[in-house]
Length: 58
Image (cartoon, rainbow, N blue to C red; front, side, top):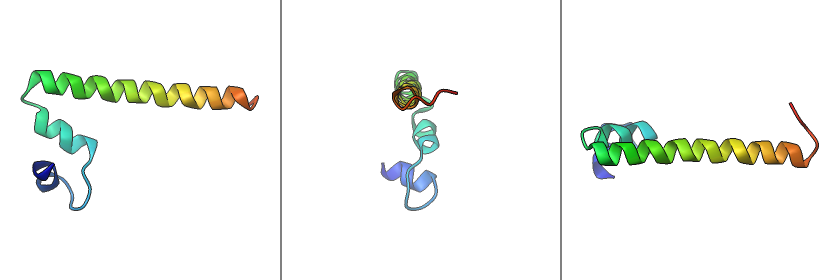
């Protein structure tokens, strides 16, 4: 995390900072990408569930 703080803007670690740090380790890089995709998928599912729950459909 210290390296990520040095790489990115001060005060906050971003996803891009973490990707930059693990870019040369294929195993870690693929795991980070997998977790990011899963997180996005869960976010979309939660949003769809909430919209469906309240009867608001797009």
